[in-house]
Length: 231
Image (cartoon, rainbow, N blue to C red; front, side, top):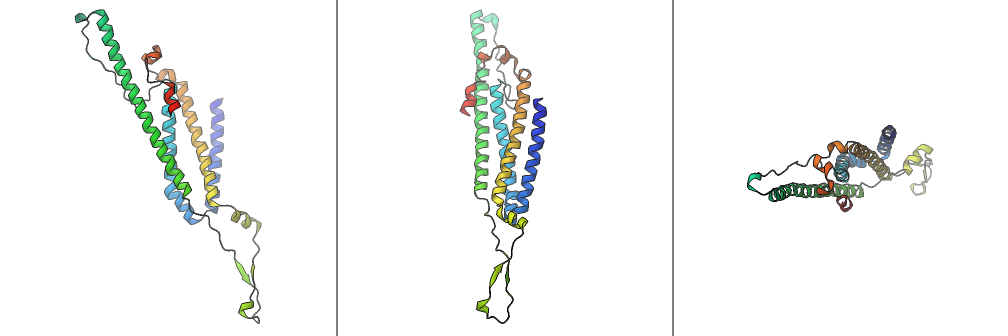
């Protein structure tokens, strides 16, 4: 039921996103449209991509799952049990196991930091592009000259032609504001996609969690909630 609702929401948001883009293109100046297409489009896509990756890595951690991109490396040093006491054998095996867990801990911390910085970089880049968005055009209203050939040039009267209601409505809209509205809707659509993938992740969390994590979560320091809080 939840997924059906999300599909309906997504379809509605995608329609709103398309309508917002077309409204912007109908009102914006050529300079604004070129700027949006040349600079903002690719940056917006990169921003959504990096935001999605960052939030999914954080979600992996919150659901006690090691991100698939990280190497599942387990240190396996040879231990000759016949040449050690049982206490020594258990101690060394535990040390080797902790070494593997420490590796995953550091790798996860590093990866989370990387994706966070990548996301922040694209976020700042998009914000700068929106801040530097070309100014709106303010066209000079068309004028007409009162026909009176007998009057000297200095006495010519310029009057403004009345604008149609539709043209007046278009002139009152600003391309920059419409583009920001489009961006806001695009963000909503991207966030909905992230929420969908996080939901899938939570559903299959048990299957993706390594066996040693399922059996003894307290021994796996990789999956700490404070990672998410620090992010």
